[in-house]
Length: 135
Image (cartoon, rainbow, N blue to C red):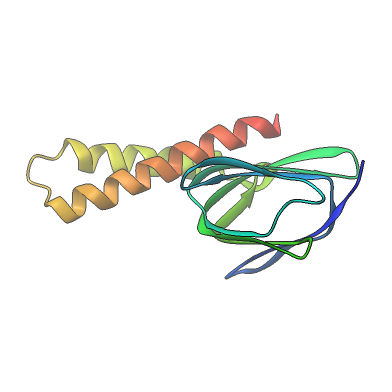
């Protein structure tokens, strides 16, 4: 299978650099797959699972926010948050879910607090879902 150069870099540093066979990410408009020869594009990322196929092996990650660019066959993924499935702390993700649900159930919470809790809940659910892939 043909490959393409891929770099995944976050504010915390480089998460991957090398040749990839396929990359699937959640863009704001839905899931998007990239393979060798993909047309140039730039798109904002949503919140979801990323799937990377490299050296014939699949790896999964929680990928939240940021941008994906494909330019002249080179792919750069610059997410706000990127966690490989086997590195996700499941207990921490579950605790974040419980805190978010508690805020969402609080009738005294402000609209800002509710929006932040909704985002935290979505992130924690994505992280937990992706962590299941590490089994």
